[in-house]
Length: 209
Image 1 (cartoon, rainbow, N blue to C red):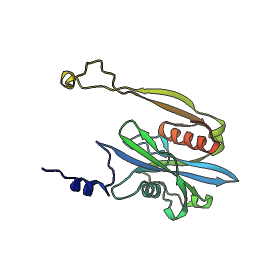
Image 2: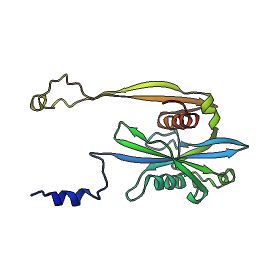
Image 3: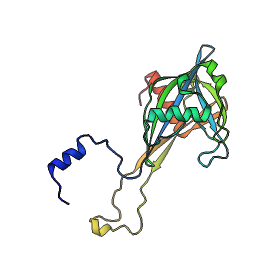
Image 4: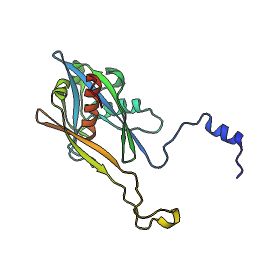
């Protein structure tokens, strides 16, 4: 095959970048509900029969499907999981993006759900066991426990060190990851959901990262 500058220009000038290798995209909505003059975050408890993270606390969301934007995915998943139509969600804007070490990216969106619209909630029985609210203030007043996690590289035994010109003690890249754990009113919120919540608190309070 012969490559030309014209071919390269036509291929790349309007091309949408794609991830190199296997990568997954997820998106969640962080629902904000005002009740009795206080702002709350809405959480759901994943059904105990789910294959992935059963019984854990999370925000509504899931996999970004082909042809949709992360924002569309967050709203679609919210409707599928708790039955709140996207027309009843006042989308505020995007939250922070979480880049996971396990080949995934998680987008977050902030949205307002009116208190009276909570009556329309119909959790999907095969996905959601429970819906509940927790005051946003409580997360600012009760910082999470922080537990560090170190991520190491494990190389296959058959890797051709000599062929690429390196030794077996080559300094592969490593990473680190914080695991926050909140305990609010007996609800244990940890992992990705806690990281998203912590990011929201830091953004609203101006806390340094």
